[in-house]
Length: 234
Image (cartoon, rainbow, N blue to C red; front, side, top):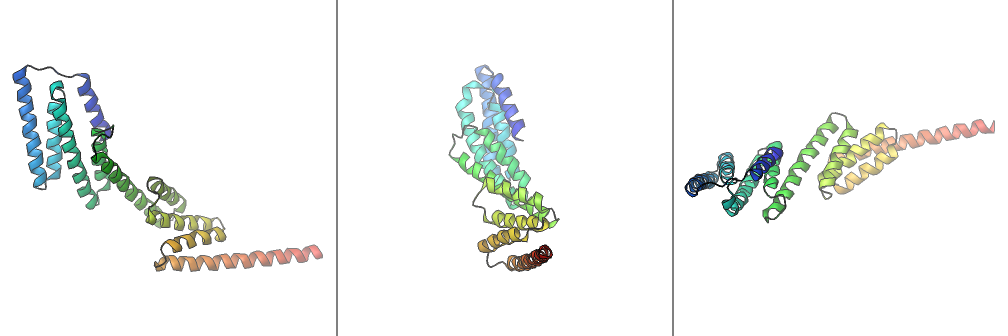
């Protein structure tokens, strides 16, 4: 959605129209009507309709050079509506829809001049983090711990303070280490997860199992070393 929006903006910028006064005023009136309707729809809770009307208002007015300041105001209004609509979609578990609207909002202010754009960027990072974290959880449940680790690391790149992703990453890395026959590393990773969320029983249970595996391997390694030492003495 972001790229189609940018494409439209570029096309208008390349063909700015100089219309006769009466014709330009007629277009401006239609744009104003669409903008007012957008505001009314948003107040009524019809965010999808409001988004559509904001787009219509900007599309009408943007090609006319004399209305550049009004277009800028329309875009600020639209950015607010897009943020509200994205929040609604996110709350409805439509993360892809929320991300698309936030991308469109950023495209309205690529230079980041509007104060709201910082909030839009933060919201987009949160939406992407939530989506990536869930993808990682799904991969972990499916038994693909290595791929899950990559998803959780992507979340942490976006938000290093994301506690849930950090715990999930530790759990996934512990499983990768176990599969590689390295329970000692798995133990360290799982202990990190428990330290972050000590009240979660499934983490405590996982830590106990890994401790058993680590102790069993340590005992097996010690026995093997002892047998090899005896062979050398012979």
